Length: 196
Image (tube, rainbow, N blue to C red):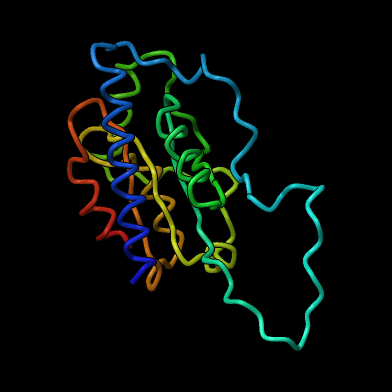
């Protein structure tokens, strides 16, 4: 019960943060193209990848405390807003980040070209290939999966649905979170639930 309460609190915190980010962006109709953002270091940023981290203790016959819940924060970000939300969730949960990156990037120089591309993919149910997808065995190890994305053409970008179609997430707690420019989540929550 505490786990559900904690996840609800985190979800409400995320929703509040999205509202704050959108309020900060209100009146800013020019989105920062990704080409002007700092380069990301790659898809997977596991919380346990620190080479200076101590080694795991050797197995013992003594009773162990229950393992901490494993959390994956998978996100797609075009302008950097969703990436910031994902980093905040990582900070709060200690989860592992994975950036969903399409093999063929979306246009970054023009908001109009990007919008046309998103609508065309949605209307034709295109599932773009993902660069460096996680192995299914890796995703299977997580208990909770946060799915983050900007709302595009009233829904999650098709790259998010490509990610979801590659994994069996049944039995896991799946928590979608989104950023938007005032429209809201559109049909994304229902469509993500259907895709799982």
